[in-house]
Image 1: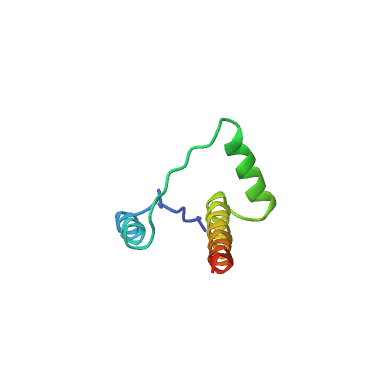
Image 2: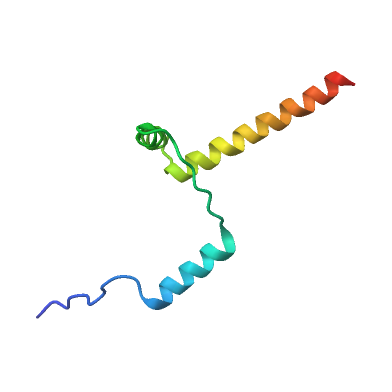
Amino acid sequence: MSEKKSTYTGQTDARRKASAKYLKESVEDIRIRVPKGDKAKVQEHATAMGESTNAFVVRAITETMNRDNQSSSTSKIDKE
């Protein structure tokens, strides 16, 4: 009996269109620049934390914004 080999050569046009549509409707891009050598450090840290680089950066931004908003709220209370 002969084995059938897959003829799949990559994403289909339909898959590419679906992916592009999802990305356009669901996410936005932010480009960041870091000093030379820091990209590898960020990637290594994310991997050590069990995250993708993107997930780590999003988490870092979210946590910083939450902390800043809490400090801002506390500052307003202190001024009153």
